[in-house]
Length: 88
Image (cartoon, rainbow, N blue to C red):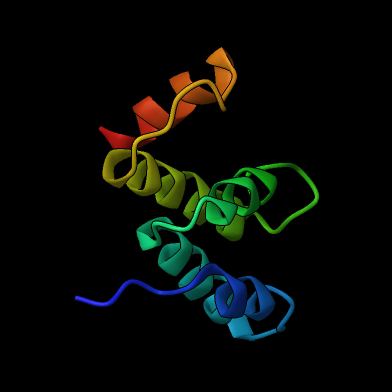
């Protein structure tokens, strides 16, 4: 199965839509991407200043990304605890 590239998905994060459906779909796609750039984008979208629904989707997608890709030393302890909690 073909994995989505991070660049077009990151571009979709700039699009407004009803109930943030486009941004949430893009964040879910980033979670399935093997692209290392997706990790930074997902981490950014977990922060305050983004819509709550997008932050929640970003956390779930971050958990998906981490379960599918080998990542080490890139995430602080507090963030990893939250990601592990969301993943369960």
